[in-house]
View 1 (tube, one colour):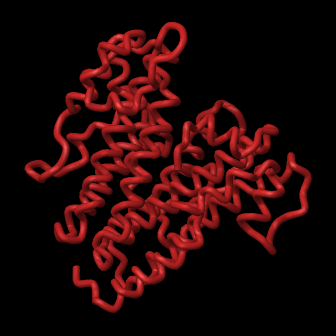
View 2: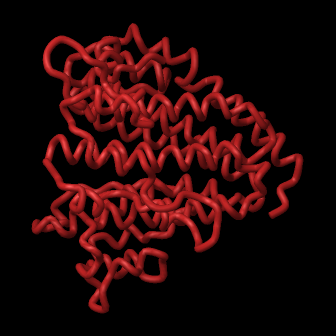
Length: 348
């Protein structure tokens, strides 16, 4: 794919402008003094802030935060005459999320029409016909997700035991990886590293969470993990079977910090403190999220006119969205932003 130099320059300049006004890097510090949800709304949306009771403001603000992030991402993807598939795939993570929600509502055993379902508009980059909800057949017909349905248009039950959410996660990362390999190496160095790290850390996080909270055995856990070997075509470069850190995370004792010292991901584990130590999955997930954010932030300007720049921009906007949403939820519970950052163990 040939991408003109003018497009690359414009994307870089526009992305830098948006990032400069985003709550990433040094601007995150502006969130710390916030103590009320309405204050956060005014900080982010200034003149467009809503005058709503706190109970109504939280879901409204969360929705606007998502729409704000998506709007920024689309504005960058649309800068390309023929957007690289990698960037479109990254944007469509919102479609996967909405599809998971739709499938859960349809299969909840309750009347899905009684449930409020608002999907994310992707400006023509989506494929699922969410307007047909709850008719799964009409929603997925002619899309790459049609494989989820049987001949009667119902959700299939003959997968390998993995839940639909995991099936979709594997599908997302497999297609994301395939789209990455269509780019020149000089265009995708940072993206390649970030995707591989994200898959590994996400699997580690799931292992620790499901072992800690549900006591799952390794054979059960495997059904909930992203299968790295499926994210690439046969013979293509990329991750192979479950990596050593996943295998170790499946069997190391959850109550012995010393046993984890040589684990590749030990730096993301909670430190020892007063009393018996035990793995804290929440701590691990927050530390891993911060690591991926910093990786994207460092890589953003490293190769200004590569596709890596746009990829890292999208990752930064999605991190910002997650951070602001977490802050809003904490403020909605009566906490301060400082308290929220403390729970997130965020050192940003």
